[in-house]
Length: 361
Length: 172
Image (cartoon, rainbow over all chains, first blue to last red; front, side, top):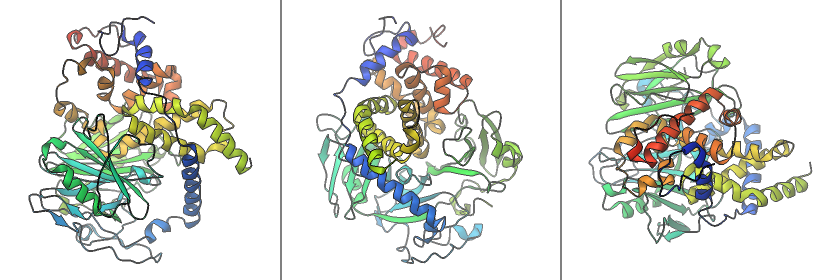
């Protein structure tokens, strides 16, 4: 180990050698953290119970929840609007198999949970600030805190909303906030009462039903009224599962182990992804992905996973890629490999009006 | 294992190692608030598997792997942090680092892709070998080597703009 690197002041002439010390200094730059172990135990026990219940209920639990919505675009440039995605979900609690929709119907029918669409969001904004569009989100089955619904505006200002498991008492540096109807709310304090760091901010609030929520806000400098608007958005976030239409459908994928998915529409360009695990365990090695984005919108963005290889094709205005490790995971090889998977993908283009929730065919 | 014993054992482990877990989480994400969240989420996952974990030879190693997975899960499931797809866009749009920030390791780490960052933390903070890092990340040793090389190259540039062209010799 050489002493030629002070991480904050000195030119690193032997980085690999000096990095360990610099990282240790950085990690110890704050007082020791204290984790609320009792809270972890409670959350862990709840998690175990939920998993057992889910196992007992099988896949119907998700489908039985409510009527659900497909994604709906809010017109950019409009005045602030409420109940953005349409009427409230139906209150059905019966375990009736969700209807499937044809491609053309997918974006017309509101509140449909399509079992052939692996990507859904569990929350939606009931209010959007003027000019914002709520579209897209992220989803990982079994990891509700990893799912998010998001909204953007043409300036690049954006936010996403996700739930948090357990409580957020570990957050000790906060700035109080007022979210109507919430039990409590605060902004993260990034030092000296500043709620903004790197042009981003985070709002936490506990709903009246006890559920904690987190909102990440990005490029706050683009909107002077962002803080008040985000408090209003938070006050009206609703619990409502809905399928997210995707810009492609795919055959041959039903036997694959879906891991997570996301779709996003920013400044007129779609970016979309489905990831699959090599095996039934999420930790299984060999994750591979389908990626789709507007042709030319991101020519360097299809790099995918480190060390993995892309097989891509342009179709109907989109670049579609299958990104997989080498050698290909067994589950991918079993359906003919990346090229065969790519051949089974139908591009639906960049216009959300043509997208579908009938993704896995 | 009886639940009471299991909980007591888990509690003992977490009380002893939660600080370490938070520090690793901080190096992965660069924000103490998020680090607390990540560490807590990892601890919950650890609890779920404690019967199996407690039999492991290296519980810290298991915990570290869970933590890295939690971190990478978060990265790959939140579009706004989906840097593998947005990497170039983000780098183009990010404001230029000022002179002070350019010399700050934390700021430099923030500009690494998530898996590169995890690779750096695992290899240079956790002191794992290439093979051990590959095991945690679920990739090949060759992959770890290339990620390490890219990360070090980028860190070198970010930490010392003046020497950006002197990149040779640091990518081993």
